[in-house]
Image (cartoon, rainbow, N blue to C red):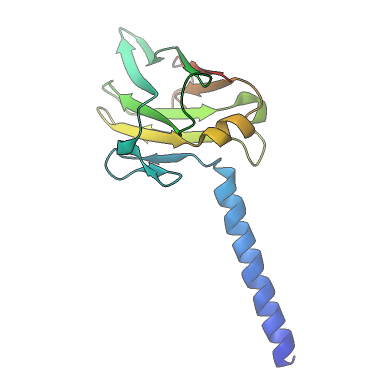
Amino acid sequence: MGKTTMLGAFFGLVMIAAGASAAFAHQAGGVEVGDWETGSVVGQPFKELEVDADLYAIEIGNLKSWYPPVTVIDFKVRPGRPVLLKVTNASTAEHGFFLTDQTTGAAPTALYAKLVLKPGETKYIGIPTSDLFYATQGNTLKYKCHLHPAHVGGTLNMIK
């Protein structure tokens, strides 16, 4: 093989690797998970954004649930900034948080966030508004504990 062929093959592999990494990044739907001080979404630090919803993993007797069971965000009256969710595990055991659009859940561009929270731990989830409008088909996102399927989840309803 000549130098031109080797260079072409190397360039082709670099392009394939770059395309694959971009595809994996796109599958996350643009959702960013982080801490209040260090997290950011679309270049905006979490601490400069308003929290749109507080969600808590709670225990009431034997019932383990995400609270509130229904959260509504009205995009008709809210500025076009990214959505910021504050997710807190207020229970005594480790819990998962899985947020997704059920209608596009299997699509490679589906919007989802998946994390595990230790007791007392809080994380923030930043979602670009464009992803909520274009990576979802419906107006409802579901959230639940993916570690414990029997736990009660909830819905995030979007008024677009």
